[in-house]
Amino acid sequence: MTEQTSVPGECYPLSIVPGMSRLFLDYAAAGQALAPFYSASPCGERWGAAAAAPALPAAHRESLANLLVAQNQAAHAGPAALANIERLRSGACAVVTGQQVSLFGGPLYTLHKAATAVRLAEQATASTHMPHVPVFWLATEDHDFAEADHVSFPGRHALETIRLAHEQAHSGAPVGSLRLGAGIGRALEEAEPLIGGTPEFALLERCYRPEATFASAFAQWLAATFREQGLVVLDASGRACHALASEVLREAIERADELETALLARGEELTGRGYHTQVKVSPGSSLLFLLETAGDGLHTRLALKRRDGGNWTAGRNSYSTGELLAILDEEPERLSPNALLRPVFQDALLPTAAYVGGPAEIAYFAQTAVVYERLLGRITPVLPRLSATLIEEPAAKLLRHFELSLQDVFATRPEELAQRMGARSMPVEGKRKLAAAGQALHEELESVTGWMRTLDENLGRSAGVAASKMRYQMNRLRRLAANYQLQQDASIRRKVEALCYAVYPGGDLQERAVGAASALARVGDGLVGTLVDAAAQPCPGHKALFL
Image (tube, rainbow, N blue to C red; front, side, top):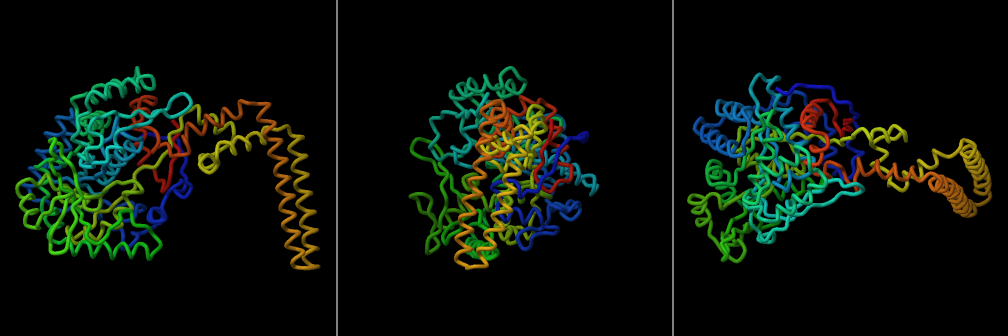
């Protein structure tokens, strides 16, 4: 079990975080499950007691455990992960999270997901007296190379994006299966000036080698990063895993009409409540992709679509239902689930007690709940990952110096924030003069416009417009004074820009914009324990973690 330490921090409501959907905000704020879309509330303290994993046949667990042992040994996982696999073999539940395999570990929220799964597994074990194991699902079957081929690390004044040049970038092949190739050397060269000379950079060099695939490199990096916590990694793209959970794929073929009807109805239900649908479902779409082999020998992942008369198409090829079922029997790895079926496929394979997701994944679950009900007869609880901004001491010092909160930085553009700080730094006499002038102007305008409204309604409206222009000019005087102060003390602008860059780089959440490896390189090994601990602390929103 991870030793719990005290992490200084502040908790903010999720409503301050830009870009959050109404669906996610309502889900996160609900004191009980947001029916009918979710089976549990993130506010529930004893979700584990009510969400025991489904029983799996002993033979299924045995096959699963053998697969996991082989994969985790290949990823050089430590004794804690292998011990957790044995717990799964013997009947333990899984707390699962996952992420697309990406260059150099992907964004910072990769760590947040894994840390949350680790902590929730520990909490569920303690509350239910049944072992729960953290599992990280490697999303290796995605074929959007442009989402996986880059990562951004902080430079001196701006984020620097490192991108992997790859000859198969536009092949449509599952990203996890692609070898990194010669381009990875150049990517490491670009990363070295930013994080070189650290144990984290040495780890990247060991994991991200030309002969490695996206999947194997990511798995090795993740297993090493969470070695002490016993995080189990799983790549389910191979034949054995697809065969083990093939019944879900079979039913997605045989019951396609029923599932489409249910998903279309759920979409109407969501939009009728004022929510959005994360995945567009249209007549004739399906929940499956088919892996085809092109003339150059590359595998291409194509969406399967249904046509009248029971036929299916993938690209230019046509298939009957019988032909797809034959492929499933003989080459199950060629059929893979889309975003709405993937969680169901995952939970047919694993004894999942809960899934840890980000805002977009949680929105997926609102739709895919109807697929769960029909194919598994239950809905897996989905719980939010840790949402946090890491605030290192230089940024913390600036927050204290300017008397700002993280919410101030999120809500205000850097230029406006600099003006506000310039106004604060003005001499006291100047502040008093501007405040007195502003207050006097406001009172006189209120008196005059009120009197004019009593004379004539139209005259009052015109007076209100004129008064607004005068107030604008008063505010302009304040801005002129603040800008002058900024010119006199250029360090204010530099400090504000440094603060915004550190905690809200480029106007984006740090956890989305900054690469996980760069945070590990700066903070060190202790960061993982800090995040696991932060995931345990009660905060139904976004955390500012002071390091």
